[in-house]
Image (cartoon, rainbow over all chains, first blue to last red; front, side, top):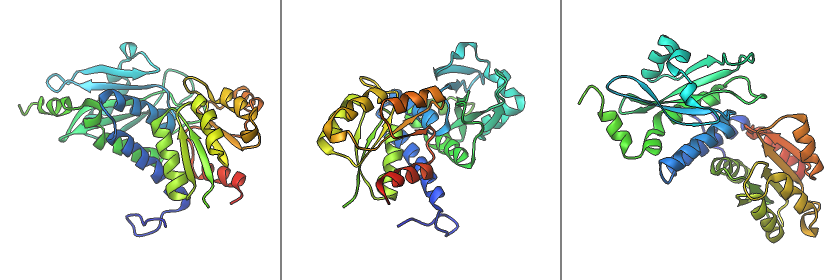
Length: 174
Length: 123
């Protein structure tokens, strides 16, 4: 029997299938053995659910607001200028906790890229960059956005383990 | 009795989603394998009604596993659907030459997956 959604309506067949994707992503993050396994989960979510085999994770230095390349798959982040790609407005949006979708300028495809804040205790402690999409995927849909929200709100502890808490505490509050 | 599907992927995330869809939402019985070698062995033991298999995997990839299953009596006729991120025609052709029946690309559309599975399992 299918469950009802928030509006009290039963989800359509397609909605139910997309909810399965969200549940799987949530479960994968929650059941990660350690941060290394969570990073593997992030790579799998990007490839299997979002359609990208280029993904990066940047940490936000809470004292200086510098963005530090932390981990990547399929791209060398040392040559990647996230601050330039996001621009001031995009960076501000992500730091305030909203995802940001831009256009890939590194080729002529015009495909979307997404930048997802990883939040802990009302702070953006890291940014996930979903970069070049697979050739048959051109844009993000509403279910991808739901997935961004899950990553944003639930992935911090899995990705950074106990240090996630200290990253959040290292803000201007302390 | 629920039809049995052998779901093969080295990604825990993909396995979780496919099980969510096929077991919890469609009442199929799923058995899983994490690479092609394990899939060939499990297919012989479990005799699934359908195999849903990733292509890029360690030890033995999906094409090789597909070929191996086609050489074994128990799985010669079993429907095999390959799942991969690659959509190029040449890649799909290689899949069909290995003996698969069908092909679906990642990110998998759940409704499309169910329709494809049902088309082979007659439901």
